Image (cartoon, rainbow, N blue to C red; front, side, top):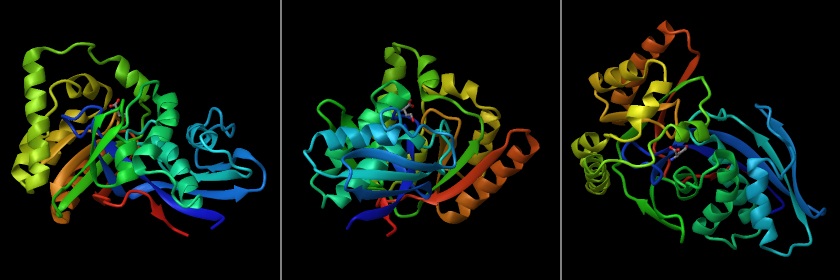
Length: 307
Ligand code: HSE
């Protein structure tokens, strides 16, 4: 195989109480990337469609990860990368992670898979951390492993893939304002009270248990974030009304996707997901903020090979 076309999925990081450690992978939203072997050594970004992003691989997220992988090997050929960027940068659904992980996933396929998913996360972290000025793998892990993932540790890198119940659907509302991850991190407190920490780890433990035991009620009751959401929700127009509307339509829980501005809800079944999306749509059309909504099953595969 000399060339590969892939679907690079969007992802939801944090999932309420799991700041920087928990994430899940979406099915219906993502970029398209083509990576081809070239007789010329090195990594080149040959085209980017959709958004105005740099072609220089040293400052392009997909290029930085690809270079990290490439430099770990001694190859006498190189790779050309084309990106059809569909996930808006600064959307909160893992735009940078899709690019950072996409280039290394595709190159690994073209090389006959010398690297494990965990090793690919390590290379992709180089691109992701350049983008957000911090090291977190809670978007990269679900993109590369699929499903729900828990980043147990960044150093050494240890990622756990979690089970989840079959009927879980995600609804995403993306108000199209840009929130840079670095900015959304800069407003977070450096320390938290013991009281808040107890609530947060109780919720995270319970959420993981709910995912393991397919306990939808427990999943819903655990989707609470007392540390990050109170600060970041202030950056998102209509956040409170979008959240209460989703809950009144039967969502199990609603919170900020990654560093925002996207908002995710988890729902049991597609009918509830559609009701939540439609009620949130009504609210957004009445505001003057352009937006998109998505309904997605959890994507257990992660990256998909298209051809
Ligand atoms: N965990 C990261 C954050 C995800 O919330 O800052 C960024 O997408």
